[in-house]
Image (cartoon, rainbow, N blue to C red; front, side):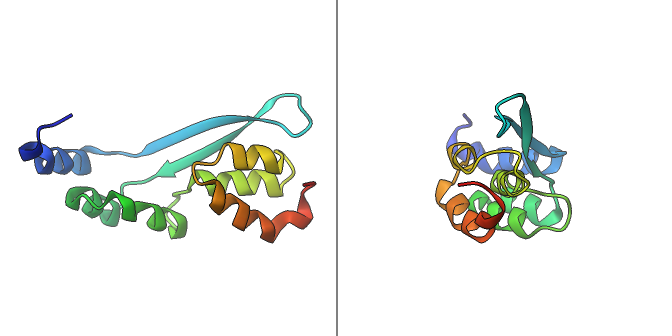
Length: 115
């Protein structure tokens, strides 16, 4: 979108102006009636802003996974919903941006859902 010489400028502008990112997905309920919200939340902490400025976007996901500042990955949300019995295992996997991660995490909670 920006010419290569302007990438650094664009990253700096984004890092300084970003207030947060929320990604939402409505997943059908396990009973089949209605939908439930799965959400991913990115909060621009100083560490996130630094990664954006430096172009190290691929390192943001682990920070989101371990953050205590209100961030949440889509997979964390999907696992929570499946563990609570609100969505099926299959819907969790099918709506995951990283299905392999969901499969690994769901093995830990599979006793609480009907696979």
